[in-house]
Length: 264
Image (cartoon, rainbow, N blue to C red; front, top):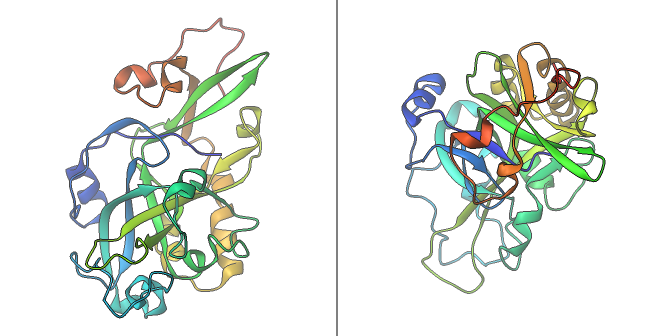
């Protein structure tokens, strides 16, 4: 699972790292939760304002503009923007199910109706500089914080989608995303059975442009090599358990007896 993240990095630094300006304002956040706005990097044929559904489109029909990767990659433009965390397929009746679809399993993403089209045509990089996982310890769940040792941002394999309310004309769409996860391996599996698909920099473009589903699954599974020596983890206070908690206190290391140690 991956249901909480941080993105404290200023927008200007993200723009420098990915070579494109953020299209909408983004506030740094120490406790991103489902339905919160998160930053993504994607390739799209859209102009920044092309989010309104044409009058000729039905509420349950996928607008052609949303099929970003149906075009050749060289015709697409990079975009750094903010979307809702929790994927809402275009055919959904409402937004309510999105909060439960923050993650898509690598093993089944190509078959699940909610994710299939986005996996084929609308992949993205979900940007973060840390994430939380909870380890069951007796009757309690202890939160752990994961980040790169050099504390720089990284990209998670993601999917994005667009949704319009039924029978409402001239309204902006809701854009949303999900993070891919896969079965955890040691040492991560000592904390949780699932882990997010963290992409190595050389796999960023491949994830966005590759069309072969088998190759895409292999790219996502590469997270097992990325989540290693370059990452560190440590327990933090249960203060972060509350989705309303925010600020540096969320990631302050918890003082533990020396015998407990940390994951890496």
